[in-house]
Length: 104
Image 1 (cartoon, rainbow, N blue to C red):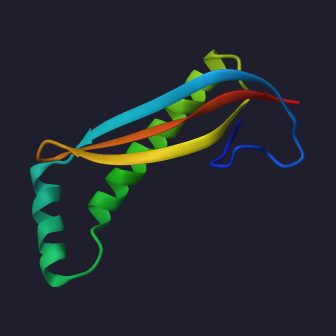
Image 2 (cartoon, rainbow, N blue to C red):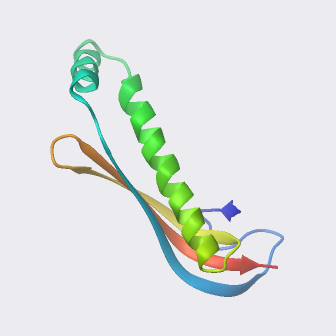
Image 3 (cartoon, rainbow, N blue to C red):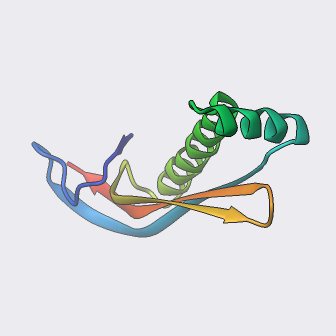
């Protein structure tokens, strides 16, 4: 399935619009990861633990988006937007939304 941030897919014609679809993922971070990420933040550098958790959340949201597009009868999703939010003290939410379409 093609998933793109653009409103069209080069070389393909959109023959039907199946509606807005959304995928969401909320991931919690554990205390040990928070502790080591805090040390990384103090001494500088990147927090690999949080980057991995962010990648997991993004992958989950996009997978859910794809599943919902397929359920709606689409074979692609255009106009995809990814949003990131912190929920509470240690929860990360990633949402992906777009329009399910049928490509020729």
